[in-house]
Image 1 (cartoon, rainbow, N blue to C red):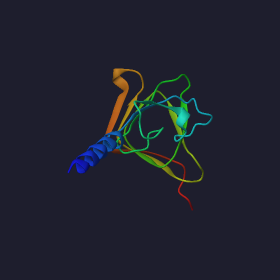
Image 2: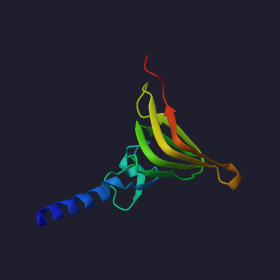
Image 3: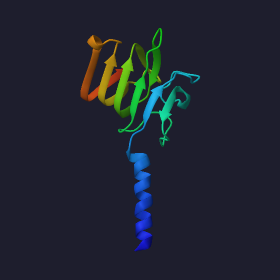
Image 4: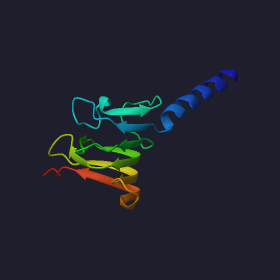
Length: 130
């Protein structure tokens, strides 16, 4: 019985690390513009991965002068907040790439220009393969 309690406790701790999403902020400090490049993201806490890639992760892309360019991969996350301008491209062409988000917030910098789309928003780049 004691062994079962220890196993369940360890399982609960593992789930806490994996089941709860992490919060990521785009830094663009990687050598490329790819979504899945770890150096392009800063994370709060110690997430199990180095970029937003689970359905419970949140991501923020902060404002920068001139905007960002980000190459998407096929991914699904919880929430995405974009402040300012972002140009999304597929990580490889001519493949179609979609970022699925539960909630998408676009904040252009003032209270009058905040748009939030809830319940399965998506950002799609690229073209359908022939």
